[in-house]
Amino acid sequence: MIKTASFPSAVWDGVTNFRADRDVSRPPDREDWDEMMAELVAIETSLYSQSSDLVMWAAPHALSTGTGSITNPYTLAAALAAVSATKKTICLMPGTYTTVASTTLPTLTGCKIIGVGGSSVTIIDHTTAGTEALKILPANAAAYAITLEGIRVQALATADVLAIDDTGATASTGTITVNLKDVELVYDTSGGAIDTTHAVALDLTVVAEDCLFVGLVGLVCVSATDVFTFRKCRFPDGLTSTGAYAAVHTFTFCDFKENSITGNAAATAIALYCTAVDETLLANATDVHTFAGSGTLITPTSA
View 1 (cartoon, rainbow, N blue to C red):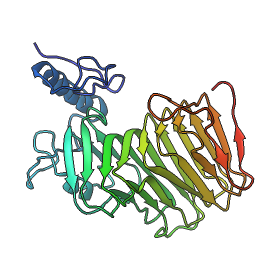
View 2 (view 1 turned 180 degrees about the horizontal axis):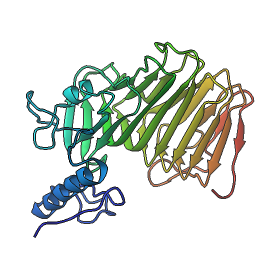
View 3 (view 1 turned 45 degrees about the horizontal axis):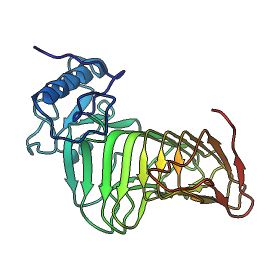
View 4 (view 1 turned 90 degrees about the vertical axis):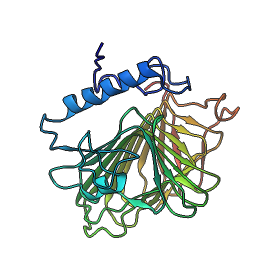
C-alpha cells in the first residue's frame, strides 16, 4: 500500500512511529522508510512545480556526477555552487553531510536550505577544529535574506558553528535577514553557536523558531533598527549582546540558564514573553538575566 503525506502542515522526523514523538531513538524500519518516501514525494509535489526547475536535491552519498534531481542528487558542495537567480532552494535528504573546510553559504539573496525530515535526521558534521562550520558573508547586503530549516550543524572545538559577517558588504544601507527554523547549532567543547561580526550600519534581523543553540549566541547591534526574535528556542550556554546601539531582543517560550543573558551599555531592550528555565534540561534556576551598563528588562506576563 502506497503511503501519502501532507507538507508543510505536518513534517515527519523520519525515525519515530508518530510525528509528534521525537524522543524515541531507534533505527528506522520498513514502515518508517515508507513514510519517509511519502514525505519526500509530498514535499516535491507541494513546494515545487512538476518540472522541478525551482529546487535542487542533495544527498550525503551523492555521486560527483549528480544533476540535482531527486533521483540523481548533488553533493552538498555542488548544490551550494549551483544556486542561481532561478534556482535558490536546496532540499537536503536525511543523513550526515561531513565537511572539512568552512562552508560559505550562497551570497545570492533568497536562498533556502531545507533538511528533509528535520534536524533529528539531517546533519552537517564539520570535522575541522578551529574553523567555522557555516559562514554567511553577504557581499551586497542592500537586501539579503537566507533561510535554514530542519538541519543540525555540529562543529569541533574552538570554532563557531554559524558565523554571520557583513564586513565585506558593499552597500552602506540595507538589510540582512537570517531565518532559522528547527535548526540545531551545536559546538563540541568551546566556541559559540552563533557569532556575528556586524561592522556595517545595515539592519540585521535574526528570526529563529524551534531551535537549539549549544554554545554562546553572540549578537552585535550596529543599527538602532536591528531586530532579534526567538520563539521556542533553547539557550543552554546563554546569549550576549554588544554594540553601540540599542536593539529589541524578543524571546517567546524560550529556555535559559540562570544569569545567562547579558546586555550591553546601550540600553538593550530584552523582552521575555512566557520565557523560563527548563530545570530538567538546563539548570535549577529562577533568575535568567544579568545586564551590564544600562540594559533594561521587560517581562510581560503573557505573550
